[in-house]
Image 1 (cartoon, rainbow, N blue to C red):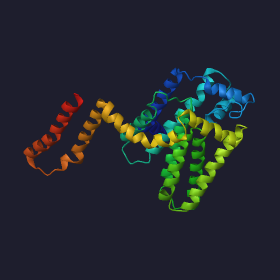
Image 2: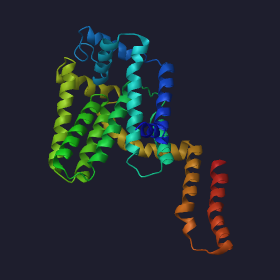
Image 3: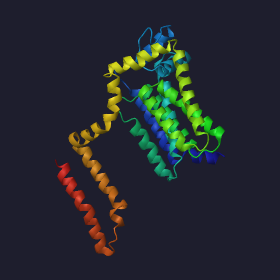
Length: 319
């Protein structure tokens, strides 16, 4: 038994997830931004009897404020106590990525690389913090992905309904943590459930939607505010600070076009790297399969592959 536990704990996947958690500890201990303290004061004022929306007119979603208030009551107001939720978020995020990757059939080292790569890609954002809603929302997304993988091909109605209820719970929590990410997660889950489940598809969709709606109502009720005040402040007033509802609807649609414009016009280096990666991938997928036998054939294939690569490198990247 001990040897089995030891082999699991020292597996490449576990070591990769552990390394990600240690990085999160270092980042959390050293984070210093202008926003420090906002969650603490929101939670403190909430604990003093003020309401988030009718009194403070906050535009943020309530779940993280409620979590912060709960930890203040449980652990106190010290600096170390304020970092405990961040470490919990980081551990759940790293563990969730590990559990998702476990569904693949890749070798252990490949899985370890995907765990580390996914984690660092996830936190590769200048404003990312483990002690705010970014990491918490990430946890809901990761465990929703895990639940969807478990739902795939499920033919047991009871199990499918339980998984659908869990997905609704995660979506509701995500919506009350970060509205845009939560709504996108909810729409994604609603779209995928009919394709993944083999049993009670309509019932699963209804259960997921009902549970998500119930979670939203429950979380808002914990703030003491009315649902009307919550909607006015976190949807309409928040949208106004971002350019209005029209902008919030339009910007996600324009995002791919703006990303292409940014890539092709303003970022020569990234475009060069992307082109070189594409050329590198073309060797095993395309060039290597060309039927040119013998040594001369390999030289010809190498030339076909290398000449465009060199031309791209000298022509595009030199610019």
